[in-house]
Image (cartoon, rainbow, N blue to C red; front, side):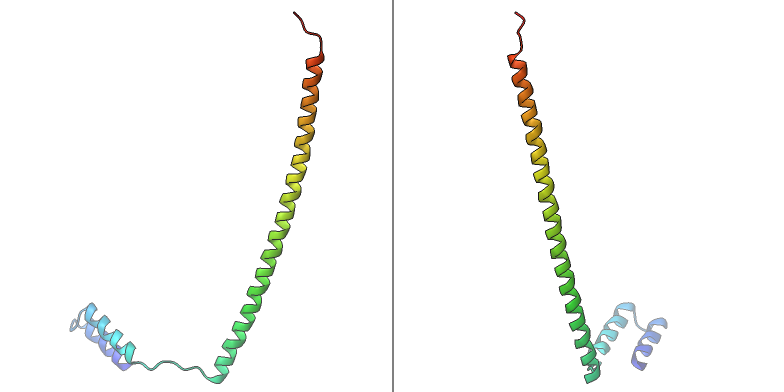
Length: 106
């Protein structure tokens, strides 16, 4: 920590420029020891991951069910629209048939 402060002081005093300060800070960062987790911390991480996996599974199932429900509603709506279209088409054909049979003015 003292090294970082010294670099920042040198920067503020104009002894080094921003690029040099950045390079020095990066060099110090590379020398810092890696953080190791305690057994307790590792267990908490595993537990949190397990819970998160469960939540993701639940979300997956919910979205799948929702997709199935939407699919069923769309299919039902399309069937109903098809039935209505058939009815309108049939009525339209019957109206044309009646018109064709009517008296014609010559």
